[in-house]
Length: 185
Image (cartoon, rainbow, N blue to C red; front, side):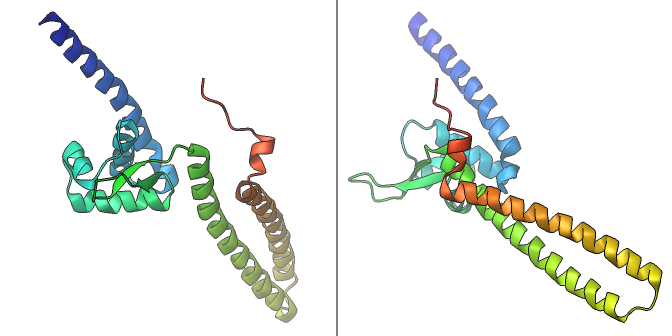
């Protein structure tokens, strides 16, 4: 009986430790564009000893299977989980992607590439508008302000070109030559 009580107590401590990590993941996962509830789903799959079905996730988190399906889709899109196959099991199984660097790179590339491209388009459109206004205006103060704005836009453009180079480092994997992946201890 004493061993059983010790096992229960140890299991409670294990779950408490896991919950602390899951809570932090859920709290900070917004950086990946993912909600806290999906972050909790990620943590649940992360600590599962075996790949999980949507039904198992639903039971574990007390959420609907539809919510689990939506959440898993978001995690699949972010490459934070992967679908796996096991002989004799007809339902889809999921486990966390073991390469966190790959997941981060995918999310970083997708989000920053899109934002950078949109900002570069806005810079070009704004420059064109300012240059057209500069050609039309007779007001010296307006021309001075336009030149100031064009200088600021050139600085922003230089930054986004640099950011594009950083994104390329992630796309090519060259970033890991500069900042090597850490080995688990």
